[in-house]
Image (cartoon, rainbow, N blue to C red; front, top):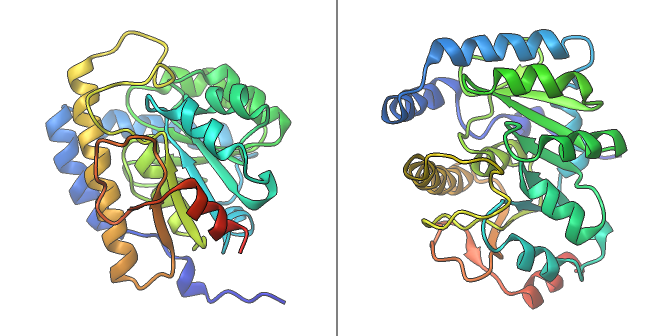
Length: 272
């Protein structure tokens, strides 16, 4: 029988430490704590009776090899690359719009979806109906999406970037990609590997289907990189035995702490 010590299942980052980091982010991007809180309260109300406890993630990712798929420009090539791996060998986490790419390339649904519902939410609802767990993030700018799509989700967990509420957790992380790492890392997988995680100035077609502020998006990509590097640092500081890799094709950004890896080496790892 597998026994897991309770202290292993703590968040990657302390709430108060995260809130200080987020305060700096909110000032740079002119975000509203008040609106974030309102969105969090709305999400909490909507999932109060159906939201899953975060601990269900333990049985899914603990000591497993996890691939986190971002919606960067390389995501199609990256998914074609890993498609050769036995589906049962890897747990897939898609970030927002990468879910649509996953459906198209893999002809399957991801195990988990980490999303703020601004990239192809209808596809995410469809995956939920087929069994994916959707980890929905609340922030000041997505209250309408929350009200529209959360009631349609079957398996849902809530997250926030401010103080948590009932059924809504704060694991740390800001963009869908880096937040996925903080969530998954809290449940001690064997490895976390990034694909589609291009954090340069080029924005992928699966990232967002609507017009957006490109300058603001680039700032968010920079923040994502910084938070992923902080995440890798936390892994070392906390002596968590989690291997971190980057399998993103032609990644222009060296994400410190995530070791570049070839498909051949990754296959050897997951089939070991």
